[in-house]
Length: 278
Image (tube, rainbow, N blue to C red; front, top):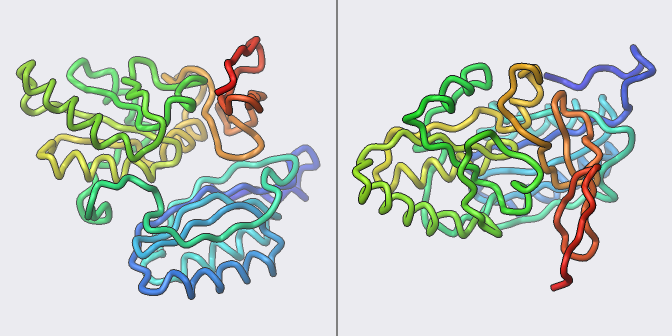
């Protein structure tokens, strides 16, 4: 899906938001940073992009033509023709400025050398996801952080209650040991995350531990909410996003949730939030 032209319908929010990632080999991400930052300045694009030797990840916002131009340039980078992109709309820029950063990993897992491009689990299209996760033999895992899960998840999903993704490998290794003790030597495991990138690594990690029957939601929660009608959806609540919208719902419309300025946790539009300052 590409962002529609707002000139055709005055009721369409004017800003296009693109969440993107791609595992690809970048030999010199520092040099690439300067090039990509220059493109974003030229096109008046805001957001955050992370670059590493393993690829690119981030979310940006801008006018339709500007976003289309940037996506075309990013797809032309080595190994990025298959850039994974999820589009949505916003009434104004959900980001205040543009940041392009070089990192050791585009999604930090600290699990040693993994090759998601070669060893990730099997993709499941959103249209086939419900059948997989309602199978009683499927172990469904939400790989996101605990504060994201509080406002929404798939019915029946396990919440690892992790504060960051680097805690996931240890949690999963313990779960695998527990499954083995319970006689589940070859479990069927399904994982999901916001846009798909975490699951590229989490399923690759699972496979590195010998869990071969492992699946993940192609395009993540965002793609599911975009293409699956609410009446057919197994999603409950809203989906946390890392920008000023805070969350989105079905159709990727802003859901109206808020972020607590004290504890940093999201809470629902109809919820009376109480927190204890840390």
